[in-house]
Amino acid sequence: MSKEKDIDKALFNAAEKVRKNAHVPYSNFKVGAAILAEDGNIYAGCNVENAAYPQGVCAEGGAISIMVAAGQKQIKRIYITASGADPVTPCGGCRQKIREFAATDVIIICHGVDGKPFEKTLDELLPYSFGPEHLDAVHLNIKNSGESK
Ligand code: THU
Image (cartoon, rainbow, N blue to C red):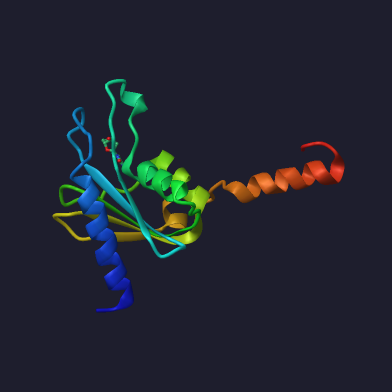
């Protein structure tokens, strides 16, 4: 088995393990997400819904919080699992959350576990994206001209 296949198997297993614990009394739609971080460790999260619906959090957001709490800030690969055959791609908000901690060529694997995994780069899922470096440019402007443009 190739190294990449081994990593994907480990990410799949981690996402599936936490997906079982998803708190989804409203949608009954369980999602798991597992991140391979720069330190080589895997950080996983599941969706956690709330009676006040907008307060729910997605699996990807949960995994990112756990990664950051562990002191990691670089996503190297991310694997998302859900039930059914259709791959569940991250919602718009989660694409932006991933963008904060991932290079635009990072691979996102989406897997409806009854079907085949689907792979896209972050740039494919979130083209022409806005990220932290744009704010750095703004701060540079402030430094150079004394005011933000
Ligand atoms: N959900 C995720 O956790 N990740 C996604 O990428 C798509 C949607 C969750 C949110 C909610 O708990 C449920 O799936 C149905 O939208």
